[in-house]
Structures are given as C-alpha cells and as structure tokens.
Amino acid sequence: MGGGALHVKSSRNVMSHKRKGFKPSAGSLGPSPPPSSRAVRNVMRANGGRDTGIELKFARALRRQALYGFKKDYKVGKAKVDVAFPKQRVAVFVHGCFWHQCPVCDLSPPKTHTDFWNRKFALNKARDARVRLELEASGWKVAEFWEHEINGNVDDCARIIGLLL
Image (tube, rainbow, N blue to C red; front, side, top):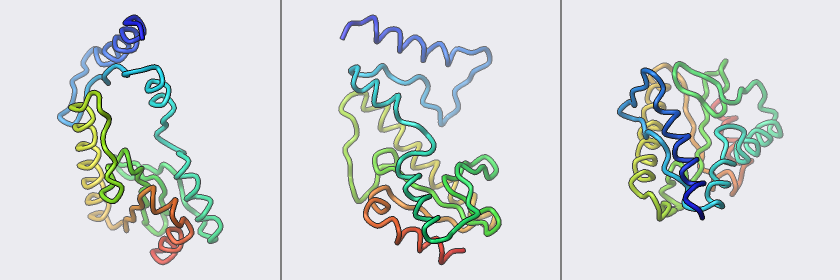
C-alpha cells in the first residue's frame, strides 16, 4: 500500500485531535494508528458503536419474550447503556468478545500497533467496571452478556432479563 493513503488517514486523525483547547484525558487513546492495510481500514470503518448485529439480535429476542418498554443506547448519567428498561431500572450491556476481551473466548489482539490495542482493551475493561459500579450505586440492576452467549442461546439471555424485571 502506498504511503499516501496512510498519510491521509493518519493526518486526518491527528488533525481531529489538534482542535483548539483539546487536551487528552488520562483515559484518552489519542489519534488512532494508521491501518495496516486497506482491508483493515474497511473493517474498522464498518464497525459501528450502536445497533450492532448482536444488539439487534438481542432486541428481537426481548420482543419475542414480550419484554417491551426497553430503550436502546440509553443515557444514564454519563454512561450509555446498550439496552435499558428505565422504569424498572435494569441496564443490559452486550459486550463484543473482541472489543471487551472476553475471558472465555480469549481472542488474541491484533498483531500490529500492539501498544495501542492493549491500552484500548484495558481502558474498555476499566470503563465497563466503572460504569457497572456507578449504575449499581444509583439503584440499577445490571446484566452483562457476551457476544458468544447471545450467539449460543439468545432466548435464554432474554429470559434472564425477564427475571430481573
């Protein structure tokens, strides 16, 4: 791959972090490293933060179980909950096995930019734990499901939520 494409991607990311007054927080990763290939670039750009396939599959299972009244991508304080039942104060997180480093699947991190990825995964885990504690401290029941659990038996996951309501 030519250096020009990498330079354009890299400079755009760096420029977005050179806004006036921008100061990376302790939990900030700063600019993303350049993609190692065009295929990696396309995969990373296609990853969305909401309405992922696994979240949509889980929402359909909740409806099949007649569990209505949930909100997707619901804000509770500074946290965003994947699926929330606000009236019952039940928060559900649907963790992707790769992004949240599932201990069962034990997926290996990318081979390039290992420092970046190790830091990103550590920050994701720390944020998950912090948000869970904050929600529980404010009276919410919190359930977390891994991608492989939902793929294994999504209806069982939905039934568990039914028991929490």
